[in-house]
Length: 136
Image (cartoon, rainbow, N blue to C red):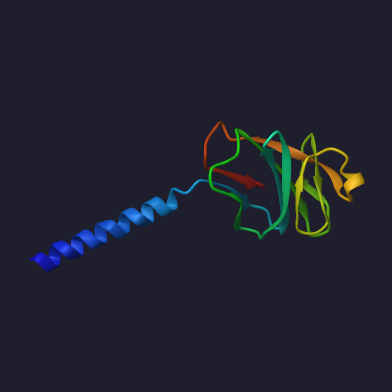
């Protein structure tokens, strides 16, 4: 009987740890299109904006550009296909680079050797965990 209680407690502890692991906050981007999409993310960092990229999201898969609590109510996304064609854009000009990058600030992109593109604003409604779906 003590062995069964210990086994039950161990199973309960494992189930709790798995549930806590699933509750991690993050920003996920899921691709419902039939094309590979490269995604960049923008967010408020200190008193300015920061951008980071790239995450490749294959059809039917998700990427996690932000792990941990979201930095604010709004995050910004930009996406392009493998030919460099915009597939997710908006009206918020921010900086990207052709290769993997992390940029602080959104002003004077070209002076810093970066490219200005228009990011879409995503309203996460203040949630700490958010998933955005690209496509249908």
